[in-house]
View 1 (cartoon, rainbow, N blue to C red):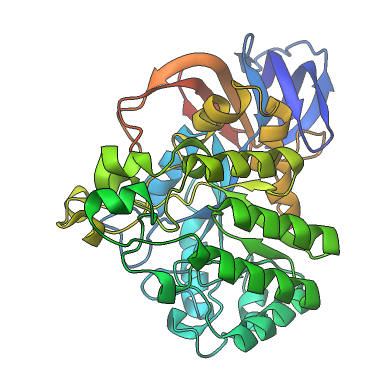
View 2: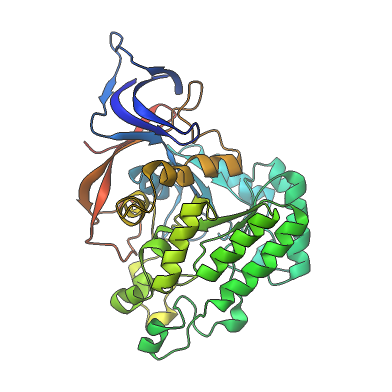
Length: 421
């Protein structure tokens, strides 16, 4: 296969320009000004950006246990449609990914899908926060890291020991930062949205107090620690300070947290309810500043499918939290970060390709000779309407919106796995 005439952006090497790319046996074999060989499949990428396939470090495919919402196959289709060639699944399945048996089952079934599916193990058995799993055995079986995502680890000593074990294995540990003691109703910021619904909601201190603790634990242990789906400007400042002190701290920002505020919860109800919740415009702007200055080094979707019936629960705050994100992430990054001039396309793609690949030691995220041919080709300007979904679920407040950035091709291992000419 030969990709011609595209504008190649490769954050891993900080290079960009108009190059042709030849793919042989699933590997990038040549880059330059190339001529098609007889019988070679040619993709004309003129007018499009050619980038490494996107990598999402935080998704929920709900498999096993909740496959009425999503499964490995439908999740993979959604990822491919959004330009993602690699994803990392969270451990809050049923059963929880706290054993080698469950981990191995997922990884074996994932081999049948067209994208690269990686899986983390849980930090504690059953996500109960009481007893650490066998990190060494999970790592040996292929765990990409560890997290109890969805539930905070309240025992500071246990969290410290878990960080030490993750550091010894040189694998990331990712943390969901919400202290339930501060939260009356989750998923709705304490502010204009909670006032609108006549509830207390979830104040930002619930996140900030946990982030402050875990920044210090990360500093002391040296573990590659990921603050998941950061929502508060104060949390961004805490991570910035911890980085300056030498902590191996990382942070994720979701497209919904840098695009929307808690006003969206008033407009969209449970479709904009998520943990941690959407917060104020000030928080949104401080998240953008954190992305710009490198404090936040990962853009991750927290793709969280739920059924329409679940999201229609009454009262609204009884509905499950989370939105789907794989199919809209690239477009929202273009709309909220690139088009307003906050960040260049190179900077955005760095947080969606090479940074996650480096942190999790993945083979993708780099358009260089000898690397896997995991590539996304997209038009950054052409608009599309958010409507039909490859995901099994459609719980998103962005339905009906016109967004820039349409994915033309997703290529994984040299195979076209999504095409929209």
